[in-house]
Image (tube, rainbow, N blue to C red; front, side):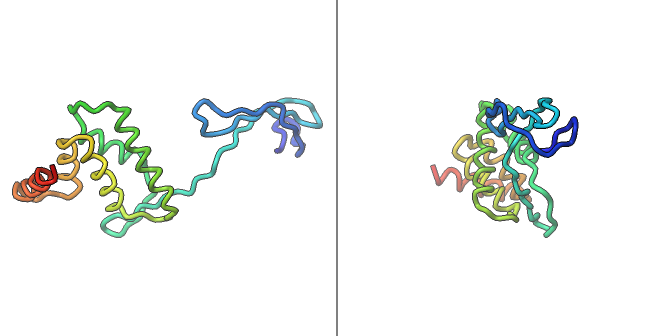
Length: 151
């Protein structure tokens, strides 16, 4: 690790501990030439997930898009934000654990719907109506009937 003060390439680790979120390791280092101390952070390099949209275009996965869609679907429902955030975390873990570099947006939508169905029926139908682009009331009723039959 290069010293930010003198540029020397050798330093020793004085202290090492995880950050509060445990997403990185904080290291206090001391330069072996000038003896000044500095802090570095070490974290796992994540490969970006590429989302393949319905039209074939590609974009980098954005957690906020999934979270925003869920918050809209769950608006005015008795679902704590912590539960919604946990749902997004679980979906992200599954996506990253798949080891795929490109994921169809359809796959993400299905993951969200499967989990949302277990949490709240109304939020599920709201999300499904946007995700599946219900064209009319009959499509909406078909989805409701499937939900009722599953219960």
